[in-house]
Length: 398
Ligand code: NAP
Image (cartoon, rainbow, N blue to C red; front, side, top):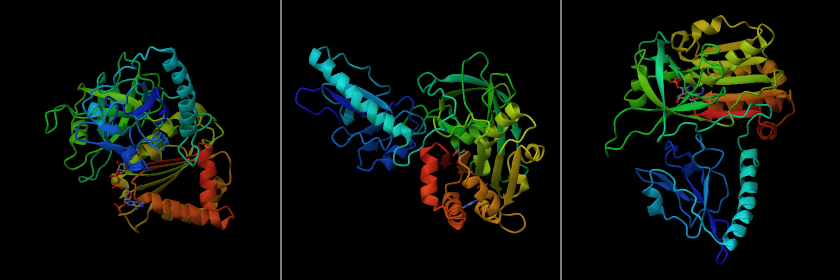
């Protein structure tokens, strides 16, 4: 923890319990085991944390990025007891304020490095608009109204819904690629309110319907899923509490010349739909420069199968692949089958890659890209790191 000199104030790394969705990604990422959790909160051990910042870019909500300058660090016990973060305490002395300024400069430099994607960390496209984040929190959620709930799939065992939420008069600025939290009603086994679950937004920034203050989600009903069943059963007119928006890196480049290689499975198509609609609304009938590889079990379980077939090929070059319909095929198989097209995208410095969906596909997709990049004399890991540092390589898998 910076500032451990004698009589120096300390800058302590904390996690905002009001925003954290308890996904534990930070805990899994921390290389020195400084983050832990109980049934209530995720906390940072001040005796271990060395402010390496590895946890900052992986947090989907931004709740990890909280700092307080303290005379004495908050203990783990303090942090486990919090429902919200304490305000910055007034340290009151000249010595403390000088120390504070020095620490602020030190932390600002570390944070800038973490957010910039040094060492291959996630970074937003250079030309992306600046996202609003955490406008609404667990303590102060927004109330949205269901405007529509439509079934997207014909497969009885695979219920995927298109949910349209009306924000009515509430300011809720989102960008394509961001997510929101949905708070299921009721309490957990300990009698505490449920925490929000995260869902990618599948509509563009100007609304599901252009110029309306609404947004859409693509939600699959999971067996025994508390929140997915709650959402999939919501009727038109019902109110629900939402938090966010979240996400500062998986964003659409504003550059209309940027080419997009979008690779997704199942409901991982949600942000790709938002990207496609944004491009469709902004470039119209002109070439959208978008190529999509989209994997599903069969046409009847592929979300947006009907609407996708109406998107012009010049806007979106789409490759829909099925694992349980005819010959089994995964997205990575089709990427290899289309190697010339993919190679052309890989060597273009205007190409951005987006991968979203099942975690399991990541290895197969990486292997396919390794094979194609290698065959054109561009070792994939070097190319990928260059793309990532330029904010052109984005992965969101669950
Ligand atoms: P799904 O229908 O279970 O799977 C979609 C397709 O992916 C199926 O054809 C499946 O084939 C295939 N697949 C399975 N393993 C694969 C592998 N190793 N490589 C390539 N393809 C593979 O998908 P889903 O139920 O909609 O789930 C989508 C996932 O995306 C969920 O885990 C969800 O949480 C996640 N998601 C992530 C985000 C995000 O990151 N923002 C957003 C939305 C959803 P088979 O099953 O036939 O093997």
